[in-house]
Amino acid sequence: MSQTQITQTATEAAYDTYVLRNYGRPAITLARGEGCRVWDDSGKRYLDFASGIAVNAVGHGHPRWVKAVSEQAATLAHVSNLYRNPLQGELAKRLVQHAGPGRVFFCNSGAEANEGLLKLARLHGIRKSGEEGKCFKVICAKSAFHGRTFGGMSATPQEKIQKGFRPLVSGFAFGELNNLASFEALIDDSTAAIFVETIQGEGGVNPATTEFLLGLRALCNKHNLLLMLDEVQCGVGRTGRFFAFEHAGVRPDAIGMAKGLGGGFPIGAIWIGEGAADLFQPGMHGTTFGGTPLACAAALATLDIIRDEQLCEHILRVSPGWHAALAKLATEFPAQLTGVRGLGFMVGLQLTGDPAPYIAALREAGMLCPLAGGNVIRLLPPLVASEAELAESVDILRKVFAAKAAA
Ligand SMILES: *Cc1c(COP(=O)(O)O)cnc(C)c1O
Image 1 (cartoon, protein in one colour):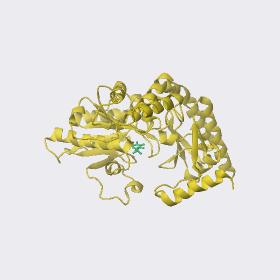
Image 2 (tube, helix red, strand yellow):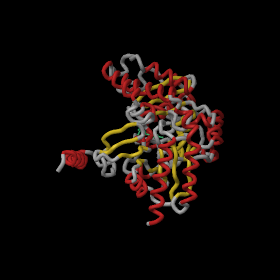
Image 3 (cartoon, protein in one colour):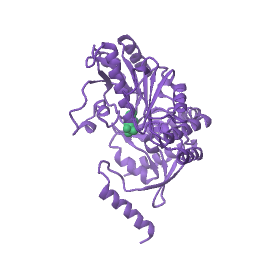
Image 4 (tube, rainbow, N blue to C red):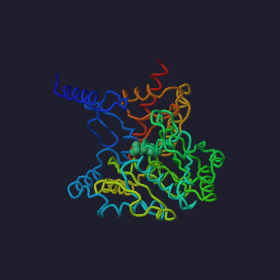
């Protein structure tokens, strides 16, 4: 038995014995990455269109990102939020430049960002009603996904997410995405905020329409509600605009970010517009790790690369051709693939059946991508993916659809 085989067995055994069984993982171990490629420990190469679930925005091992993270690790990794550090203010300024006048709080994940937004909604409800416990309802969308914390789960009305963990946090109601009347009907005196993903990710890559988002903005203005957008998956350049809501020209009151922000290093953030930023006063919220110098260095490098390599412009330029090639697949294999949805580098392929065997076949054929709810395959390339790599993804998909058609 070779050394590699022994190591593989040890990795598998360690997972089997010691790692919590909350994920059903395929039998591969990823060992190395470069650009849009990852290699498993047997040396097999994959086109990585999972991007660690929309996280590896600048690809794997981008030299500028690696340099920034390595140097910061050697300089100052962590000090907590009891003290200032040289990078957090700069990163906040950069996000304010994208989002508009306001303030930023840093945390470590998407779920944590959303917890911050849900706490903000409670504070706004107190401002609105004059007392605690009277105005706290948050209206979210059916088929939403906002994370696995109690607040996030409570905002995520999926049986597969909530089952086993009730009672959940009270004060949530759910309308139909892109059905403004269904949201309006849920508004009453106890309502504090509306909270939706600009493009639903886990729910099946379902974009909120421009008309819907502008309609929510108008409802929020009319009823004094906060419009809070979850851009954890669709934000930070993925759709070809820094925030996905920019396509609609809508202005939210608060934004949740995470995934792509650190380019592979864990960081989350909330931006709160100036009308609500002062609702958080000293002592009302906090985190030990959030906005640590190392995470901020990773995020600043990611934002620098997105800006200097003009990745949003790149995405706007190359995605129409890619989407068209994917749509052509739907005409070639209508019994398997019925539609292509999404914006920029956040794409959902609507299958007629269970996506799991397709995800496995694509992996066999050399491409990684995640599935989503409602029989959808998600394609989430790194923002640096080239036209050739996009074309390769179409070739691999065609091969897999053709093999299934022949089977
Ligand atoms: C992934 C995701 C979350 C949760 O983020 P974590 O970092 O896994 O906690 C929340 N909202 C959306 C839209 C997501 O895609």
